[in-house]
Amino acid sequence: MTEPKTLLTRRALLSGGISLVAGMAFAAPQTTQRPVLRPVAAPAAPEVPTGVRPVARKNAVDLIRAAGLEGKVGFVISDHETGETLEQVDGQEGRPPASVTKTLTALYALEVLGADYRFATRVLATGPVTDGVVKGDLILAGGGDPNLVTDELATLAQRLADVGVTGIDGDFLVWGNALPGVKEIEPGQLDQLGYNPSLGGLNLNFNRVYFEWSRAGTDYTVTLDARSETRRPAVRTARMAVVDRAGPVYTYSEGQGVDDWTVARSALGKAGSRWLPVRFPALYAGEVFQILARDAGVTLPAMKLVDTLPAATELARFESQPLQDMLRDMLLYSTNITAEAVGMTATAKRVGRALDMQASAMGMAEWYTGRAGIDIHLEDHSGLTDENRVSARDEVAFLNAPGVEAQLRPLMKSIVMLDDQRRAIRDFPGQVRAKTGTLNFVSALAGYLETDKGRTLTFAIFAHDVAARQASLSSLDEQPAGAAGFNGRAKGLQQDLLQRWAVLGRIGG
Image (tube, rainbow, N blue to C red):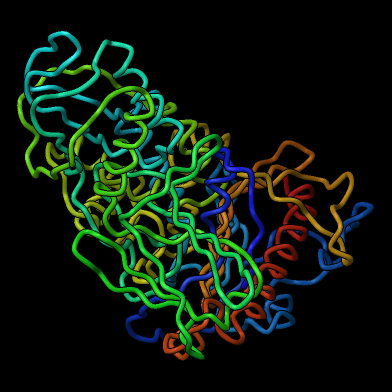
């Protein structure tokens, strides 16, 4: 169970919190219709450019059958300029889009909040500052920033010191209600999954704590801290005990304002580390801020949580990176907490009040009925739940809607095309920018394919094994048996289809 250590830049914090699998509840099985194919108008055996695999000569139904995914996949490929559907198999059936949901969330946030929107975390005072002392309460007030890290919180503490504050004669208050809080984005998953943390109006380190262990003889030394690039403050809002048992590897219980963890000694090995989710985010951030403020020369008393933000004057603030940059990272690293926070913040601005996560996601889905003329069902903004339903047809209609490609495509990740030895194909006749989505027995990819002739194609490929996913829900494994095989075959099919379309798109354009 040993995990590698990483340099804790923001990029490392983002990538370190990502796992490609998740176990969640699924509703009812769906009936899969017989595949329907509309072939691109092209010769049966087109000339294949150098480096591209011969799969381009096969039809899509044969490729699906060869991948062992018949009845488990739907796709649509269209001409972006005209919107004409060029080829489709079961494109009308709604399936879990997994993290492809984030494409919808990204555009929603951009159009409602604006590309330059920044989240603000502030320090406020209810009274004046006299001789360095706040004559009243000091408040750490979150603004919903999902990407705030310890080094940035240290900058905020230093800015407080820079305006001359050394202490307070009132209370140290912590307010984390800018967004409705949830203890975990998707209930029912394994407790230790760092990509399924809590969410609220005050978040830190993607609401994860760093657990590290090392063995000396028969005993283990364990630490829990809020580390980022230059700081590693130890925390007391999370505790870990090493216990003798065969399994499960981790257990979690909710203490009085503290996360109580145990880990099986037999699973630890000699040394290692991993991120664990935090369930009391405001308390976690408040504790860390208190430590950082002390280091900056500001003495604070024990913190108190408040539900309502008092009338107060701002003393210092820290603003996040612009929303557009945050969304680029979100699409690249697929950070679930970012998607939920930006989606809920956009809804709060649009409707005039903050809604809970599910209500906000459903409101976002309704907004898309008017924006893109699509009918989708969403219960979160990240795709971590497989209760979301989007068809390949509706995803492509969204990507083709006016103004979407210009805003979204530059934020998407470049997808490398691979040969039979899984090496990057040189001089591939096209460029793919897309968003991936992966859960256990769910694999999705959607985006844009630009051929070397300048033609842009829009596509969505959704694969979902209903029966296998249901059967996996009782597993205590982070990656149930068969999940890696299914997802590997689905990703291989994505490569096959994209290489086929790159060739056929050159001819049809």
